[in-house]
Length: 506
Ligand code: BG6
Image (tube, rainbow, N blue to C red; front, side, top):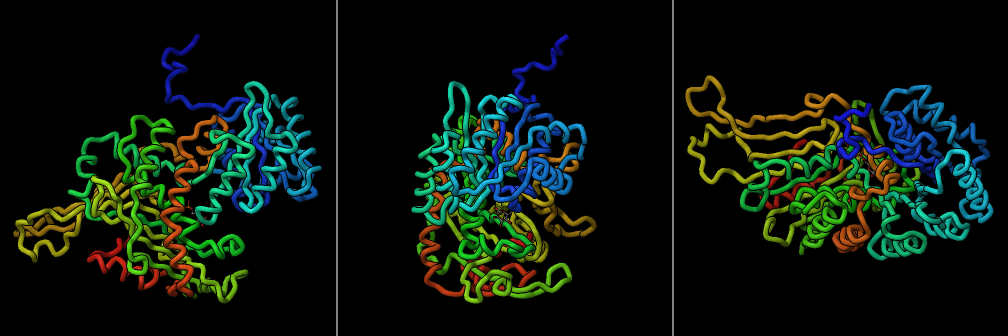
């Protein structure tokens, strides 16, 4: 008997992907091992993949299907969020295939097509496939061209083909547009999924929920009440084994162009008419179009490069001594930028964005810092420990929201007031752990739902903001050194001090 409480139109019910498969390029990379393959297993474990799901790996390795399956299994055992269950693995692994191919060899794509067609028959994937390009962007044109020429992007009737690309979406506006042309040559815009994994994070989506589901925040969400907004993405790790990717890219391209500008857009945007992809994007685009870059880039931006130091009690090398980094590299590992928005709601409110490697600790947060009360009827000695009210979205690792406000210190005869905080912690309020960003994003690709993926307009607008800053930086030579384990170079402190403010110490 059907359960009257389980109306299939109920939008709270989990959506399960229909028959489909995923072709993964770059299976030997870090991202595939740590994030993509574990997320696929987690989705299977949560019952969100179709029973006949197919996973086809493509790489230049002499592997048989079983070897690749073993790689996936190892990655899952090491990195999956949910517990390992043999019965889930048994079903998933039946759909795992491997194509030992060379990315630039047309014959490899003939073989790939044969395997994909075979998966359609044996697994019932019905011609629905996503091609996940977890490879350096320089290789996108060759893969996309071969996918098209080998007939792998052709679909009949209701079949679908989609492509998933990871950032960086180009190196600047021009190359981003070139990249778009390549993708558009084989896929329509709604078949292109650009992953910004920050948008898949529950805590990032929660910015919109907190803002638009409540009455008490929106009335003060504007320049009448907000003094400044500080968006921080700090990491304690260095570049690890990613020299090849990171050198010449740097902190601004790696994190500000995508994650931090998306956080800014979600924090500042107007309420969308609905949460449909088109409506949300429209509001984000308005914000990105309203961003004004500093008139004096030297005064309102800062960049740095980490030096040797100590982290977690162990000595660490400086950026220039990292393996694979040339001793003359001018790549920044820390970047800070002050932006303003040219619209009524945010006129005059600075948005400070900063990101860096080898900082004091790993933390990402959006802090909305309010103005001081217009009048404080206290002795100045009673409010020495009272700072500005703040609402902080703690994106990670300690997920939640903090409100900071002043409160009377008990036991004092006078009205001594100091800062206290009210905390919402995910772990206290929700039983289940949050899905990984990649679980949500891969499921959305398979469902064909793009609300959490930036489109090409957002990407272009982000580069329009960053290009002039990067152009200027490229003329400045070496970034300012900063000690590993600290909070960035002195020029970043000077930058914000010029406005009479200081960085939050997360
Ligand atoms: C990636 C960057 O996009 O985000 C990395 O390329 C960075 O350099 C990572 O380490 C940070 O992601 P998260 O989710 O750990 O904040």
